Amino acid sequence: MGIPQRFSLVTLGVADVEAATAFYHRLGWHEARSSVAGEITFFATPGGALALWETAELAKDAALPTFHANAPGFRAVALAINLASREEVDDAVGDWVLAGGSIAKAASETEWGGYSGYVADPDGNLWELAHNPGWPLDERGLPQLG
Image 1 (cartoon, rainbow, N blue to C red):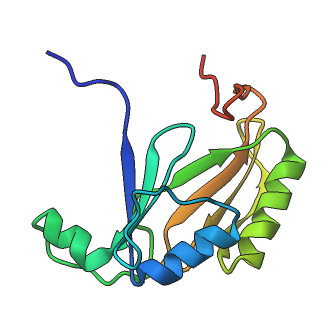
Image 2: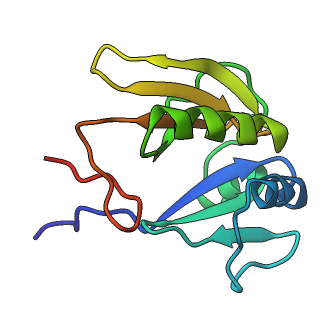
Image 3: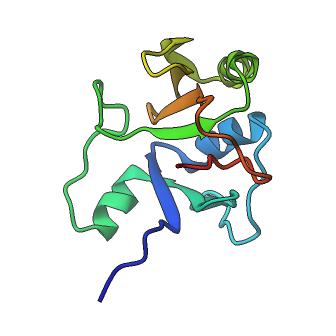
């Protein structure tokens, strides 16, 4: 037996679902009809879906103690959006900040020959915005790994 090599859904714990949803709307994202206003928001992506759910509810569902949603420090998880060029990375970082997010690490050249920066949503969820010339993007915008 094997478990399929994929993920279906990433759920981000947030302090306020409506405020978090508004942030992702400002990025230009469109929520799925299956969202429940004020309770949980879903965004369909070319890969898996993204959900926004109150941190306390997510912890309760997993039968784990709740940590503070805006806890400082690294949470050991980062999501990534790969883009077609360095210019697209810079534009995306600018749009992220205009929407109300913050820069965790300014975009710069990487040791692996790409260009990458880190941003955070208002709840501190970390995202990498990157261009990797060794991973061309397919028609859905997903990187093609060798």
